[in-house]
Length: 217
Image (cartoon, rainbow, N blue to C red; front, side):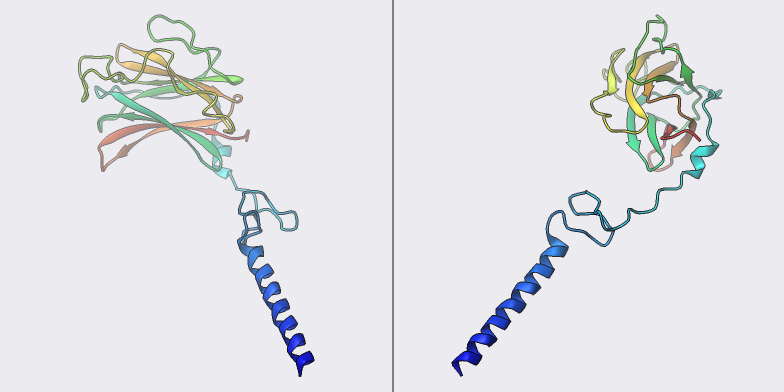
């Protein structure tokens, strides 16, 4: 009777240990998940990575200048950037619903509006982004008097902030003069891009969107 009790206890303990080990395999930091990636962000060696993203839309883009001819009396007041699966995105917010013109294209070097002084940026290519609207604080109007979008040369995004990004390398302010504003955008290389405007109907804010592909077509 004593021998049977000892054997049973050993079996129960062994089963508990196996159950605990199975539980840890799915929950411990760095363990594989159903997606084939570890919870620590590292791919497992015994499970295939997910299929690559199809970037078919970016294959239709080009590196030639793109433009729209219209002017806005509203102010450029915000610049922001984001990453997508197939491209990096730059968004310029203009404080009003009116259509706004733009000129976006690669140049040997971006220069300041008016004075023509160079505004160097990191990367093997310089993309000049001109929006046909004055920057906040550079004309007599504005919804926030006394505030300024930035001094000439100001980094909206520095190389350190964009470290690890696929396309963007830096975004700097090149000034505002006679109703237009310019940004100097550093790009990894001369990659295809697209530029367009859209209206945020909820806030009545016009946006100039510049998407830069991660790869050549």
